[in-house]
Length: 129
Ligand SMILES: [Fe+2]
Image (cartoon, rainbow, N blue to C red):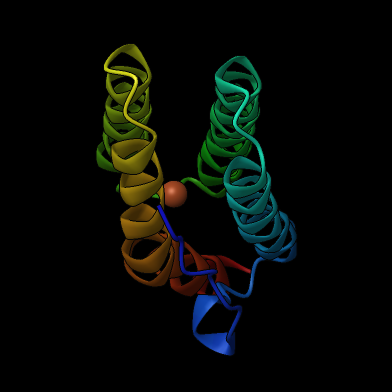
């Protein structure tokens, strides 16, 4: 499976420094892990790499949720559910041993959630700061 690397553009910027730094690292990690998966035939190692991505996603979501909580972001409950939903999909793909689905869910997420849902948090932050 050939994965297309993600590229950072200013479209991804929410304006909240902590979130932007984490998104930037998240994208770098996704690209690096896809590279490593393509270069290795060791399936146990693949699983460890996907686990690394899951753990980072989980860390990042909690971090983002705490920022939303601190800001008093009114749509945070709905946003938390979107995070849970992606984590559930990633876990499901792991159980199914489907690296392709796992990577696909993550790409879709990055390309859509960051530029819609996360940007709304940035817009709200500018109204309260
Ligand atoms: Fe988010």
